[in-house]
Length: 445
Ligand code: PMP
Image 1 (cartoon, rainbow, N blue to C red):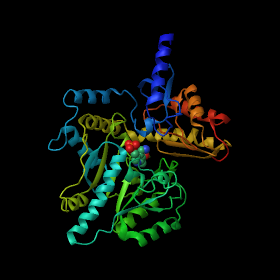
Image 2 (cartoon, protein in one colour):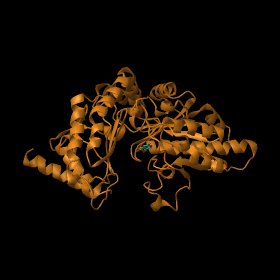
Image 3 (cartoon, protein in one colour):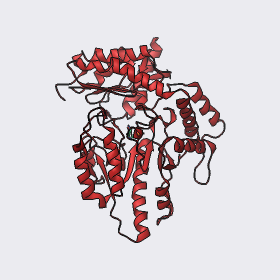
Image 4 (spheres, helix red, strand yellow):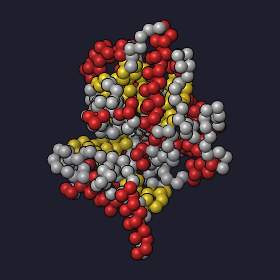
């Protein structure tokens, strides 16, 4: 870079630092941000010249890599037809094709689709659907509406908007700050038996008692199927999810599966619910839905829920975002799903899983590491200490990779097109930083 370019870069970053919020960092003393020039395949290229192998898929969203010709084509062709049009009273082929595909691919009873803008909104929509469903049911028989709460498990994460926050883990999920305004929901212990551990019947006893005690107050039970992501990359036993399904059916509680992070193959099944062979009543999708190109989310529900809501007092579901079913987003989602199915995603995911099992799992031998875990294309290294985000990030950039840890977790979830030598580079970079004290905070933070 010449002097002019260096000064220009500094000016841009300075404005960014002074005036733009970044997620989960202070505005007065922010963590550094790196200026991206462009991105291609699994590479994120910085304006300062470094080319980084992406280990994050931009928070689980970029499935087929950046700047993908097929996805670019879908987007530009759609832009030349219609980029946006309101969904009230109008419809279009990209939305119709996408919803047909979602109904075909998701578990059997999910027949109706509501499209929205982001994962958190998809969760808001799911919760509102559950509450409106219970309201409509009582309206039919003139009964009092008592089912107005949600049941969930600790260590969950469902988004940053208010209803979503109210079902996030009560300790790490910002409940203290917003205590006075959040819905008061009911929390069961986090699932404890790991994905590949022997099943223990005791595991769901407390959950069962909560269902028994509170079912008259509970509209829905919400859970991330199989993987509690933000809560610590915890992979839990499929029997737990099976039991959740049984209890929901037994106590007339709707089951909401938040597949926003796990959907579209990430865990080794197209949807994580398939590990337990269950169908939820409501399912939320987001993140990878457009292959990471544009924000879009979907909430699917059963015909029974849709019909009950439609026969209720309001006669319709009370939601309608401005950018609902944006045609650009829908057309790129259709193209991304087609790529996923055509590219043999099972092979791609099992290749990543096998590479991670061989190379990431042995990092458990390092004394700084508490545990390593792999499921599908997700690899996690849980450390004994929390990371120093600014320092570890800087080192990862120097080592030519983009990995953004949080708390005491270093995890990778790369685009499915990643190759063996690129995986090596990600894992070698993790092995290197594990040896560096300044990348970590004090003992057991
Ligand atoms: N649910 C889960 C399981 C998630 O992982 C996330 C995002 N990390 C959300 C909901 C919220 O999605 P968004 O960030 O698109 O609002």
